[in-house]
Length: 209
Image (cartoon, rainbow, N blue to C red):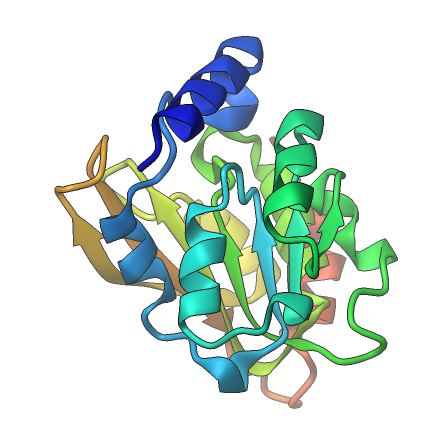
């Protein structure tokens, strides 16, 4: 990991600790775990909160073409740096909760989404908005990968219920600073075969904060 990445990440964290969620960028061991089930066949891929691009580089190494990556970053400073590192990718400097209002890949849906967002520190309603906006771009059978520094899934059970999603822990590493775990979120099967990303939108009132 480059010193410049560490310095820039710390600077961004100092300016917005709740939005960034960590004092150091993710390490290579975490990048390996969160991307290991992704291959070229999953392209295009969306990454939420790419930060310094640690996961992005790993995705490209897994065979995802750079022009099949959409990088959604709310920090203007990080977004500018990502433009220099990954000029062929589509970089959106925006809140991920508005992703369902954006056309990303000319109608083609993503096969996977990687998230570095600090969902655990967000209010439940905000997490629901992000998940629903994200799954609107995810094709059937696609997965949403989320990492966390906590001891359990960063998405609350009531949020999973609201969005009709299931979550499974797929790995973890003690080599990251701090240690981290990765969860895979996927749509549940619904009785009538309806896409659960739209079903969940009828349950927002029950989520509360």
